Image (cartoon, rainbow, N blue to C red; front, top):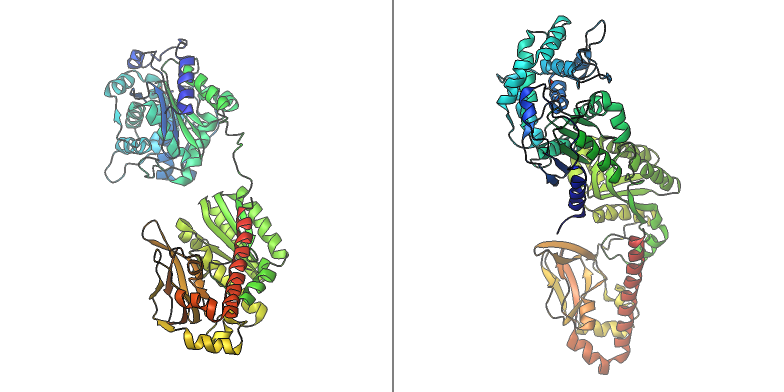
Length: 606
Ligand code: GLN
């Protein structure tokens, strides 16, 4: 199936393929051999999907596009301040090969014109016995995600005819911007410009910059994330030579062009674009390349200064413990308490990317909840995809500040964020692996505060204390005691097995059991916890279908067993007792259904 994006790119390609304007560069003699018909367009997404049309695998020399990436390596080698002291970041408004250096200091205006690029080349270090050029080649290769090589013929051609660049090199030496004999720096620069790439490589290099410096296919870091915005900034302001202002106005993407006919453009955080077409306009930018980028930007709404897709808030859902509780069955009195006071435990489910602007409304909402009397705030992070450092710091600050006014903030299901949450100052005790565990802990604390006692039953109950038998007379209790067998289970022992037939129902007198369903073959998921006084297995017992879940003893469990045959015989023997038991079971089941309805509507709230 052809993607609509592929179809769109093919139309775009067909629109400009017939345009034969512009001149293939010939000041480097070897470049004039390029076929003016070569034309490729590529888009690479941040996760490494590449859409391509035309001559996207045709190798050509990278030329000036290398300047942007070499600037990244110089920054990594020398640090921002050092590099800024040698090479400015002001657009020059002059041609790429202008012999223009700032008056007085001799610093090149920016690293995207030849003077600045040659100076940048001089900043790259020789490290661990690896010559500069070898490091540059490896660096550019890591952006492309494959081993690049040099077009030796183009390199020699430029080296033999690069008198103007040599003049620039000597001027830089004169001003002390280049420290050593500029000959070696210039040769490294010529080689760097002669690295062979394809249109597809350019798009992936762009995607790497869009992906905070990690190459999307190899998943290896190509550039330290702290320098990505520096590189994109000089591309945005100076990448298209003396057409940079017009470019950012019309296209609105950081980009870099080269006289080989390539253009690399980046939509920060989103995607990379590569276009290749050798004929150039007066400024030395690929003529078709510019037209393609203008159309792409307009037709796909890619102008970076007109971002439309930023979500307003990261809150996906918000509910409280009066609506949704932990997956466990509470005694009726505890259930009632939570229904009345549950709004004090609020759950905020967050989603997507957490950055200042998506997290700011979360802060506001959390503070509002705290002011309205909420005492526990649970952040469910399961649907969070990314979180920047600022959002994590704000999260930690919020926790600390709310703790100061007696509101406990906890976090759950952080996935890969656990370490970074801790690094930003959230103690491990406030991070839960599941929302259930977080809810349990907050519910227990709330129930304790409201009622002054634990809701947990720690002793063995008598039959008449169990809700299902509560309306029985003393005489009936004696019958039950006589006729219902007792059974004991050790911790870990199974009371009920999913899929089996259901001839028994259990009434727990002591201990706890866990109800588990099997997920995806082996993973067990806890769906409920029952405690003394409650019935287990009553659903399948009543409707006769096979068991739907496993029930396993969590500690030592004592229970009485109601068998199907005994229950059937009760119709004739003690019909009143049978009606009472059925009424009690119905009451219990309808209470649970009511609770489920409240939960479902809370969880479906938009
Ligand atoms: N190697 C070329 C030069 O220095 C690069 C120029 C360019 O691509 N604009 O002249």
